[in-house]
Image (cartoon, rainbow over all chains, first blue to last red; front, side):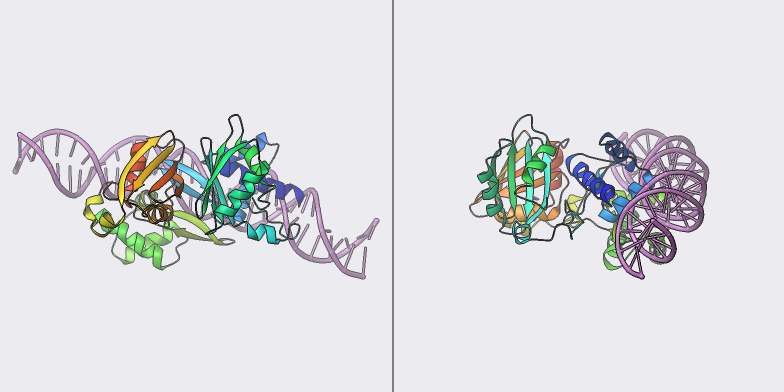
Amino acid sequence: MKIKNSRLDAIRLILSTQDISSQEELLNELAKEGFKLTQATLSRDLHQLRVVKTVRTPGQYKYELPRNSQYRTNDSESRPLTTQQEANGFLSIKFSGNIAVIRTKPSYAGTLAYHIDNCDFPEIIGTIAGDDTVMLIIAEDTTRGTVLRVLRSVIPNI
Amino acid sequence: MKIKNSRLDAIRLILSTQDISSQEELLNELAKEGFKLTQATLSRDLHQLRVVKTVRTPGQYKYELPRNSQYRTNDSESRPLTTQQEANGFLSIKFSGNIAVIRTKPSYAGTLAYHIDNCDFPEIIGTIAGDDTVMLIIAEDTTRGTVLRVLRSVIPNI
DNA sequence: TTCATAAATGTATATTTATTCTTTTGGATT
DNA sequence: AATCCAAAAGAATAAATATACATTTATGAA
């Protein structure tokens, strides 16, 4: 179903760009995006995405996507895992302030950073790569959602 | 307190050797080991250990310890700090904004970053290493003191 | 199309987990 | 030992989450 898949995508987007501490809260965020659903359905969605509720600091919870299913679209037949997709080594992306941290499989970071650099995205000021980590410095006034969107051309499986 | 600490150890042992799907079930296992406690206390214990409830297969849950569960509140002196202390090459740490910069002896940075990565601290969203420098991106709303505290498990001599 | 079947969802509720409030316990200090 | 304080724990309950059941909606085969 189409609605469900785009909703799952929305959930992934939200969970990787902001701190969500309850299903109720996530439900509100989804409502802002125009998704109308009940807690029961959300519970099922989170279950399917294998989202876990973690403890950030004592008394403070955060829903997190599992490391390797982070940002993978689940309609795998509509998007077969192409060479490009498998080749980029992308694992996850997280944000803090104006920095994004991308984790990759070992040794993939340099190549991925190279490709991102080549795109000359105005939203990304610069990149630096280690062995399995790429850091992106994000331009001022650029939202995380925008960063994710522009990165899609380099990381389809984001 | 002695009882509590040994109980936390027992929980760690149980969770890493068998599949536990609810607090109720864990409570029973603990009872077999002679630990008498209520669900409320267990909930607090799991909270402190940062245990998460994951989905194994649809409908089947499992409580899991964080990958590196040497999370300590204040009993860091109970751990022997000999081996790593000499080996990690740590020299200094400085902060700017949400970035921490660690200086190490030449060639130690990669290994140190690797160990920090493996801990999956929620407070540190990513690291990147050169030859004698590690940069850490710190999660939003995390204080420098907290960063120092969690790093103690990797860098006892911090 | 029409029927059959599966997937998705809502409602209501069961189940599970977190927390408030209170009491107890364990150390430290005098 | 007596006192104080903080950590720990229980009981009860609130809050959060999962699920059984019923209904609707999509999907596919004939």
